Length: 197
Image 1 (cartoon, rainbow, N blue to C red):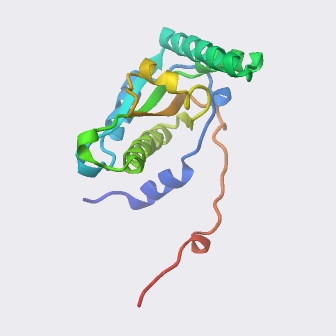
Image 2: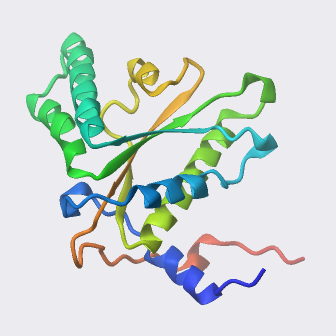
């Protein structure tokens, strides 16, 4: 296997979270979304459980997603007294800013006896594969865990059962020129201990 290592390093280091307000509104080619999903499918997975489950929203599906999460938010938060009209409106309209939104689920295999955290890690690695693919195409993308992500009542809408985990939304759009921000990291030496003897 011979890969252009400098290009791979650059891709990893230049991947960024690019938010919907930075998208042009131009749709992303569905073939690229399919490539992202195919690359997600090659994430590491303990015992090959392949726990990732994706629901892709685009076109009128984005409106359906917005309506669903806004109404669920209203129902749950009206009952507990935390409802905010501004958040309701944001949940209804924010999906319309993206070309595609991929709902992220972790499907639990009780027979596999694998810790939940390992299955969630597999889904996270699948998302990283999608994020790197989006970056390679120069697209805007980010993983959000707001809205109804942690509402137990949301799972059924995304085809998940009570033992499964809903892990948020992966937004994808055509990035505005110069929208991809600069970023920095603290030195890796500050975060690593070596044991050589």
